Amino acid sequence: MVDIIKDIETTGSWNDMRSALGNLLGLDHPVSSAVLARAREDDKFASHLFISRFDLDLLNLFLNDKRNIEYELYQIPENHSNMQLAKKATKALLEWGKTGFHTVSKEIYEQRLNSCNTCEFIRNPPHQLAYKVKLKSESDPRICGACGCGISRKARLATETCPVQDPSKKGFNLWNEPVRS
Image (cartoon, rainbow, N blue to C red):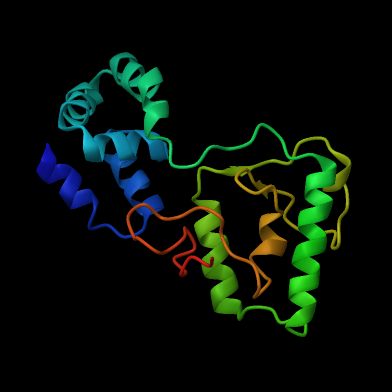
């Protein structure tokens, strides 16, 4: 089983590894970060996942095991308040303005969005005033559950960064960019 997990670790980014393990288990979706992290650390758990891949009920018991929470990489806040979001947006706008309102290249923007689209933290926005503001009618309304930001806007700004560290690449975030302090 350890060899299978090691093979998965060569697939690329953290989200690629989540997808690879999901595929290996016969799922049509990636496993959670907690399940992947636990499988990487706990050989017995990884073996149970692999053995139960042909029995969906048994597999779901392991995938939804309460002990998986101990392996969560990032605790998602229940909700970001309108005030928190306004403060965050103001700070981001000021930082962006300091750089002359620079945006990233089309390639980097698409790479960031692709990372967001495969991320387990992506969410539809809750019904809050802060998410009712639309700068463009065709704007993607989805948000990052980790920080509360609109992914299509955040990914475009050169001054912004993904808030979640990639556990498979020390010093990098899930956008595969160096973590900023």
